[in-house]
Image 1 (tube, rainbow over the protein chains, first blue to last red):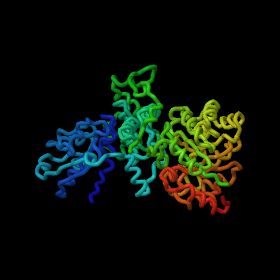
Image 2 (cartoon, rainbow over the protein chains, first blue to last red; image 1 turned 45 degrees about the vertical axis):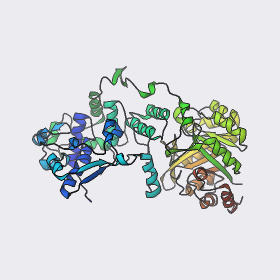
Image 3 (cartoon, rainbow over the protein chains, first blue to last red; image 1 turned 120 degrees about the horizontal axis):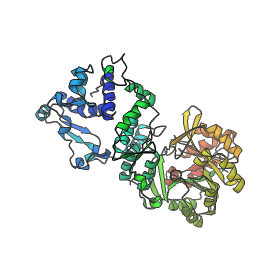
Image 4 (cartoon, each protein chain N blue to C red; image 1 turned 180 degrees about the horizontal axis):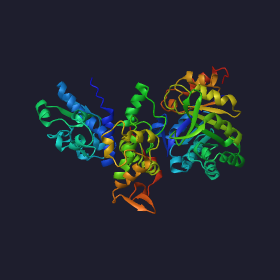
Length: 292
Length: 248
C-alpha cells in the first residue's frame, strides 16, 4: 500500500493560485488524484491501474465513456516548462513563488516515455460496473456502519455522497459561477439518470438549492486560502490581496461569470437560463418506477 | 392498548423508503400496501408525502380518496401542510388526522388554528429528531434535510400546549436501519407528554417493538420498512405487544 501526503503548504499555495487564476479551488487535488497513481505504478512495476467513475459523470464529453481506458494525453507531458499549475507557469512558480522542483513534482504528469516503456494501463471501474452512488450508500450502510452526514451538503439536497472534503463546497460553488450549474444540478442529474429521482423533483431541488453560497466552512477555507507572510515569505508578495475574505472572493467570482450565462439585472447577478424556467408537471411521479 | 400504525412514506402514489431519510427507493404502489396492511389487521395508517414540502403544498388527496374507499381504519395524512385550508382539503379527502412538521415549525400558531377549527384529535405533530449529543435532539424539517436549531424536547412540550393531539416522533438516525428505536428519545418525550407519543424509526425486530413500549413508554408504534419488506408480520408484532408489561 502506498500513501502519499503532499506538502501541505505547497498544496495550499497551489490551491490559492488555482482560485486566483482559474476560480478552480479543486485543481491541485485533482492533479494529485490523476497524476500520482501512474507515477507510483511506474516506480513499483505495476501494470494496471483502476480509477472509479468516468469524469463524464460530471459533465465531461460522454464520448469519453466509450473506452475503458483513460487517454494518456491527460497525464503525460514531455517538458516541465510547458506546464502550468494553478494557472501559473512552472518557471514562475520557481522564480516568483519560491517553489522548488521537489515541491511541484507530485503535481506534474508522468513522462510519456516511461509509460510507453512500462505499458501501464489506466482503466475506469465505471466502464465495467454500473456506477451508482446510492447503491454504494446502501452497501456502506448495511455492511460498514456508515452514517449519512448530519446535515445536507451546502449547495445541494444530498447527505450521503462526496462528503469527505471541505473544499468540495467551494468547488461546486465555483462551477455554478463558471458554468451556471451547481452541486444540486450535478447530484440531481446523476440521480435522475440512475432512476433515484424524477426529473420534476430534480428541477424543484435545483430551484431550491443550486448555487447556494457555502458558508459552513467559510472561515476555515478563507484562512487556508490566505497566503500570509509568515508561512509564505516569498509567495505572499505576489498577491494583490494575500488575505482571502468574502469580499475578495466574490469580486473574483464576478470576473469569472461568463456573459452568455449571466446577466446583471437590478444590481443582482442572474442566470440567463435556468432549468426551472420551463413548466413541469409535478404529478409525473405517478409513473416513477425507481432504480430497480 | 398499544396501537400499531403502518407508516407509508410516499412520492405521488409511490410507496418509498430511504435510510436515515436518504437514498430513497421506490417500493411499489402505496395503495396496494395500504390494502395489504388493512387486511392484516393494522390499527391505523399514516401517509407522509416526502415531496410535498419541496413543492409547497399537499398533493395526496386522490390517493386518500382511493384509500378510504377500501381501508376502514383511521388514516393520517402529512406532508406540505401549511394552512388551515390544506388541512380541510386532506380531511375532506378522507383523512382522519393530519400530520404536520415543517408548517408547524415555521408557524407554530398553525397548530392552535387547526385544533380550534377541527379539534385536537386530528392534529398529529410530526417531529423529525436528529441526535446532536447524549440526550439531546434537534428538530429537522423537509425530510430530515434542514436543521432548525429547535430542541426536540422543548418543541414537544410546546406543541402539546398549542393543542396537538398526538406526536409522531421519528428518530432520523434510526430511520430505515433496523437498528432498534431511539429509546432515550421516546422515553424523554413520552415521560412528560400527556398526549399519545407514536414512536417511529429503527424497528426491525419484535424485541425493538417491546423495548419501545416497555422502556420507551411509547403509546403507539409507526412501522414502515420492516412491514414493507416483510421482516415483521402483524401476528408477531401483536404477540410482542401482548407480552409487554402493558399487554395488548
